[in-house]
Image (tube, rainbow, N blue to C red; front, side):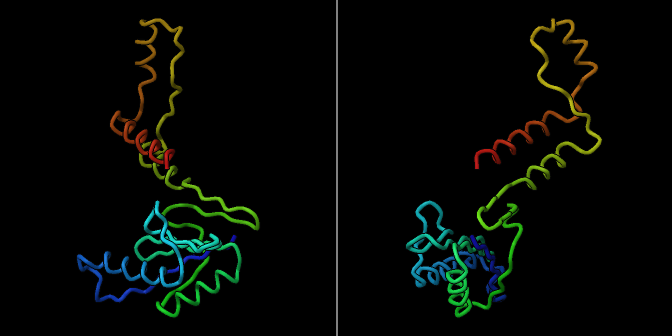
Length: 171
């Protein structure tokens, strides 16, 4: 599998205009449709060809191009360069997703987001507690234990971290 990313250079005159994102989406979508790509019914920013040997996903002015072979990738690059002033590069990250590849596999992970969440909610000096407490501990022992093993992160931060981890786990 081959991966490339592209960064079209947008006309600076449209930056900041309220309708700019809509106009850019309309123009880029129109270009991709003219290249005989099909818009995904699940995600309007994902396009693919008939035999699904190439996929193009975009977010604002970042394009991710995935291809099964070099020739198809090069053809798509040339077609895009006919319309846009564009730079192509190999990538390791796309929209905070880590992309690792070799000859046979493609691995996309969100590990950096999880590390950032941990650092945001649990600073380096945070003491880690073992939870849950064994159910065999009596209530009076629990009260004594709670004084010794108070959580070092706020309840709000803990709930926020759980929400963020839940989000990552369901994507």
